[in-house]
Every structure is written in C-alpha cells, then in structure tokens.
Image (tube, rainbow, N blue to C red; front, side, top):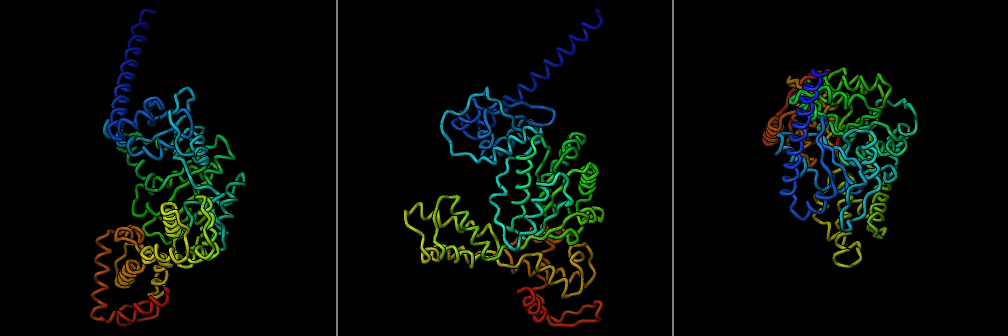
Length: 478
C-alpha cells in the first residue's frame, strides 16, 4: 500500500507536467495565430469559438458547428500550420470536432456549403484528418466523353463491394478527375455513416510519410492510412521516381486491398505511361478499372456554363454560352474562369453581358486559353512516330532513339501547352527542369540549322531533316 502511493504521486506529477507543457504550447499557438491573422479576426473566429487540443496524432480543433469548421479550414489553415511550425518546428494533421457548448461567432458570415459541412461531420465520425470537400456528384456534368467515368463512380458508391477496385482515372488537366474523386468521398460520407475514408494528394501522402519518418511515428502514419474503408489519392504520378514512397504505398495498397476495401486513384497518364513507377504498383493499378477521361464535347461545355451561371444566380444568353464553349474547348477550369470574369463584370457595371462585350472582355483571356492538345496526346504521337513506347519516354533510359523522342516530346509540350519546364519534367517521369530546358534548346538548335536527324528503330535506319520531323508531328497532333 505504501509503495503504491509514491508511484501514484509520481504518475500524477508527470501527468500534471505534461498538461502544463501542452497548455504552454496551446497558448503559444493561439498567440501565433492572432499575430498572423490580426486581432479582429482572431477574436471573432478563435478566442471564444474554438478550443485547441494537442494529441498524439495531431491538433484537434473543437468548434461549435460545422460551418465554423469549414470557414476556419478554408481561410485560416495556412495560419494554423504556420503557428504549429513556429511552436514545435513541424506541421501535424488537423482534425475538427463539433462541441455545441462553445460560443458561436457573433456576426453573420456568408452562407455555408452544405456538402463541405457534411464532409467535416464525416471527418469527425471517421476520426481521420480529412479536409472539407466541395465537389459533389450532383454538380458533375455528364457528357459523351466522361459517361464511363461517371458510371464507374456510381458503381463504387452504390455497390457494397465494387468490382472496380482499384478504380483508376487518367486524363489531361481540367477534365473532371478531381471532381469525381471528391464526389465519391462525399457520397460515401452521406450514405455510409461511420465509414473511415480519406482523400489526399500523392504529394500530401509523401509529405506525411517523411514527417512520420522524422518524428519516428511510422506506426501512427500506417494505422491512419491502412485501416480505411476508402482511400482516394489524387495525382498518383507524383510518386514516380520516389522508390521509398512507392514501397510504402505498395504496402498500404496491399493492406487495404486484402481487407476488401476500396481504392480510387487519379493521374495525368495511364499507369503504364507513368515513368519510373515500379512494376508491382503498375500491375496492381491495371488489375482494376482504368478509365480515361477526355476533354468535354461542345454540348457538355455548354451545360457546364449554364450550371455554373445558375449556381451564381445569373442568367446568361445562349449565344454567349455557345461562343464560350466553342472558343474554350480544352480546359474546364479556363472555361469557368472566363464565365466568372463575365459575371463579375456584369455585377460591377450593372450591365447585361452581350456577345459583343464578351468578345471584348475576353480577348486576352481567349489568347491564353489552353489548346485542345494535352501532354499525354503529344507523348503518344511522338512515341508512335519514333516507334518507341510511352513508358520509354518516361523512363530514365538515355540511348539515342529514346533521347531523341523525349527531346521532341519536351519541345512540343512546351510549345503547345502552358506547362512550365518543371511541370513538363514532372509529367515525363519526374525529370529535372534543367533536363527539359536542355532538350528544348537542343531541338531549337536542330530546327534552326534544319539538321538531319538519324535514328534506328524496328523498321531500320531513318534519316530526316528536323523541320520535316516537326511538321509531321504537328500534323499528327492536330
């Protein structure tokens, strides 16, 4: 009896010291947030409306309702992470929980997004660190080019155990991959209460893995990712050329797959076209349903304009819609951005948007709009022309034929898209931006002197002037 009392006293003392340390850190985090966002915003959104708690798995933010959680996540996430870095030298996952005992903010804020609120509520039930997701299935415009992708998403949502596992989407920028990923998560959240799900980018997965290594918390990281009912990862091509992270993701994939749970992935390229991706991952990705999403057709683009305008409570004429859909055929984000500019102009000037004013307002915007062609289209054309595989172009191989193919691919991607040198390198197997610059310069010099390019493929020796090669490739791409 006597021996237990000192032990209990020591444990009580240790617990008290830990609570004091956590309290000091919380105070420091509050002070850093106040300094970052300003006293007025801090007083309104944090002082009485939130309670911060540090746990073994991250920072828990208690809020009075889901709207405040969504508002803080959307407007102050960067300030909170900066405060965490300033206090303990690293970022940690953030989790929101609802505590109605807390005092709500004192003044009216803009209307909340009900679907984002649903996502936050689900995050609380699932006990995982999931940001509010804004894109939902009812706002996804279905057309001829994305019908299969939409049906596959419905199957994953509706079936208790979908045969499409993993479901792998690939396609160019702004065609709806992220929209479908987030929609699947939101529908899981709405229809399967208590389901453990997570939506992250591959970059976020990699960052969390590195953080877990540095803090020696790999067990927490693995528990968080491997005990899920649904894992959704965007931009999975980010893992190319990162062997350790590919190995970690392979084990994560296997754990979820063996448990009979669902995995959904998205990439800019087909799994077999992602350079420097290990064969084990490629084979697992293609073992399920691989769906390509192409750029939307004219009718679908028109419907996107109508719905976007209706969501912003603005009536736009059909001639303006047809003009926008006809001029901006490559990227939905560009299309929506142009429409937003028109509606903003109408609101500020209090004038109705006409076809004439549309052409005038968007003259510069239309010049900078994405072309129809995307990097994946260019890579496929170049690969066929030189009789190599897309995987060869993405690979680290440096023999003459593949280097020549890769150089023309990089040059054309730079010429025909708005992608930067680092973006091109990342898309083509994780190459360094300096490699892309050098390749483009090499092709430019060959074109300037119209140098004869020599190579050998399965059909024998080939010899052609650089300008002729470029012209043929441009014709095939167009």
